[in-house]
Image (cartoon, rainbow, N blue to C red; front, side):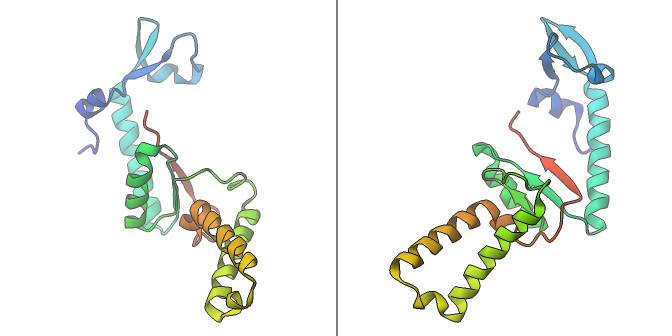
Length: 167
């Protein structure tokens, strides 16, 4: 039983490809035909590949591996964050932190800084600071929370990356 049907893909417009003059030769097996200088994608093959991807993701989740969900478009932020929270996976819905995959140690340092600020608040050292320092630190904490709050519990690189786009 397929999770995504042929009719659902047609309704979503998934069969519309790219312009014929801007194509990647690796896509040749998945192109059904050409019409009005646009490639039409073979949805029968797409249904099979979507099912394969779903099985792989299911196996990864069962194995306890992390899948990082990424959706930075306005229309998708809410839905992706809710669904990722529901399944307990990390997600990025705000700006993509530069070097998140290639320089993960720096991202971990920023998350640690966020944790240090929380500790300062909990143990009372935050109250001993001046008004200006409190304001600067709280602004820094809010900024870190916005960009890194959803990946704060991610201890190492994710096993897979799932990018969601409105198109």
